[in-house]
Image (tube, rainbow, N blue to C red; front, top):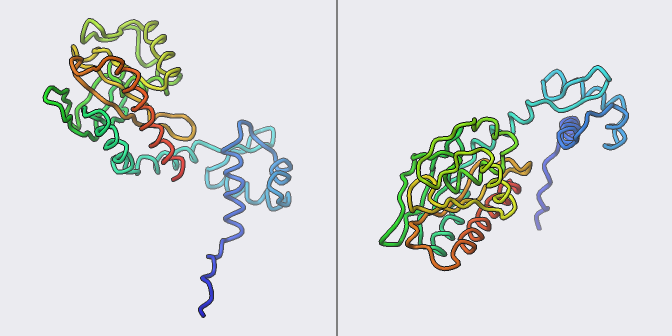
Length: 255
């Protein structure tokens, strides 16, 4: 009978350094050596030496009040890992689910400045359908996927919209105060609804795909001509999209 495989050996110094870094990343305030050593059950001398290494490598900064905090380098590393994810593969089951449930065009979109770029789609099964190509774009404030991303990131993006917004149909929201109200509704219900604001009589629903910190990095959407909208379909489609996007977001949290 063969012995059970041994667990791989973990380098003690590396694991302790990562413990300190994870603690500082999760904290809303900087911390001193004594506080960190107490929370992580490390000696003060060991904590200090590890902090000096993290400072030298650029992952931690040492403030004048002798406390330590994580730098943006940790964010940059995390951001790079997100950008290397294959979102198409990750979201494929949810896109298939939305297609099966609605029969309409399903899109996966990512933000690019004040636009959204469609990076994947499932074609509509209906004879009358909406159409946008993979690689196509739309203003972020006009379509369901864009509005969902905008709402999730509104604190950072609002000032970028500017006082004057282009009009595409008679339903386009071009007033910043109207968009403020729309973002509040979108956040409350968990999905965005485009009432024909980019293309006349083409409706779309979108929900944001978010990182654990709440930042939206993409969105799932369903688009359809208004003639295809069933009675009471707005709530149903909105909740389907929200459920699908939440599922992808949960996958990101487990990576």
